[in-house]
Image (cartoon, rainbow, N blue to C red; front, side, top):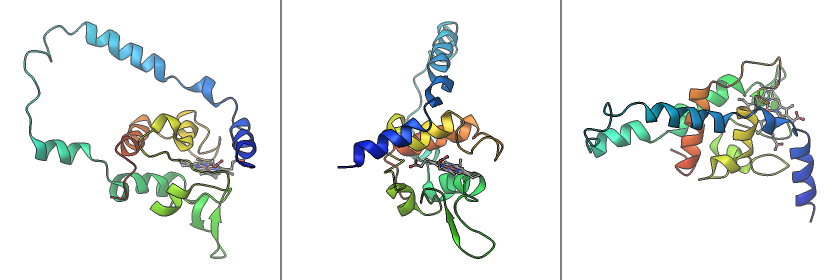
Amino acid sequence: MSTPDTAGKRRGSFGFAGTLASASFGVAAMAAVAGFTPDAATSHPPVSNPHLRESQDTVSFAEQILPIFQNRCAKCHGAEDENGEVRTEVSLSLLEYERVMVGSEFGTVIEAGDPDGSFLVDMITAGDMPPEGEGDNVPEEEIALIRTWIEQGALNN
Ligand code: HEC
């Protein structure tokens, strides 16, 4: 019964997030560039090599995603403090797959298959996490990796 309320409250506290997103500009720029490369990439279809594609394309949670969370998020979302207590902000721990998928007391932050519907992606894309003055914004390459991992089903791999 309280679900819509708490969701609204959570989103409300980050109400300015959307104005900072520049995804649509990026897409438009890429389309423009593509229009000016008539024959560079179009003469041959990509070679089909399933092994190569798999090793390049499948994002590993353990090897690629977890290290990002450990480096940038752990000091507030799961690491131990000086007394050996596990620190969790609004109970969100990002140090174990199961906890990442459970989310916080306000609900899930990852929607498998749907990066645009994933609150965690909103937060890092808008630069709201890590909080201002508490660490660099997550670089675009890392955001892209997280998005791809979610698109591929947010696997525990
Ligand atoms: C300096 C501490 C700190 C760091 C570092 C940090 N966070 Fe947070 N995070 C918070 C706090 C505090 C909240 C609670 C929301 C609020 O009131 O600001 C929060 C909330 C969140 C939420 C929303 C949880 C919910 O359900 O409302 C997400 C998602 C999140 N953080 C993801 C991240 C990610 C991903 C990183 C690393 C890239 C990160 N945070 C780094 C302190 C931190």
